[in-house]
Length: 92
Image (tube, rainbow, N blue to C red; front, side):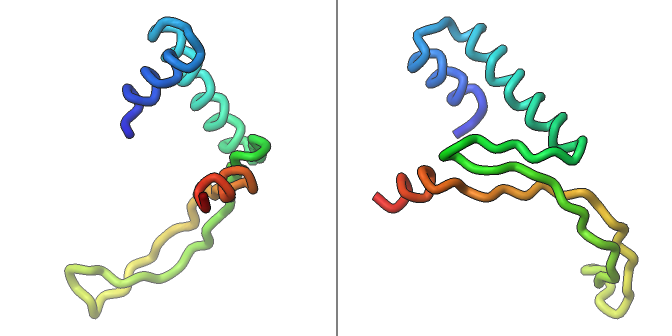
């Protein structure tokens, strides 16, 4: 599902126009992104938890030249842990 389809479904379920639903979805995504960048965890009860963690620097292999090692710097990555309600919904 792409963002436009999600916005359309949200608009239908919330009984609002598409423009309002788009603003809400954009605001939600921006807020989650900002909080994760600041190192905060975003918990949506039943759905899941978004957080960030630091992946440490390491040596990797250059796929074009497998004998060459390349340095991969430390980077902040997103972590998502699904909530119980989401897991249960997928089991049914």
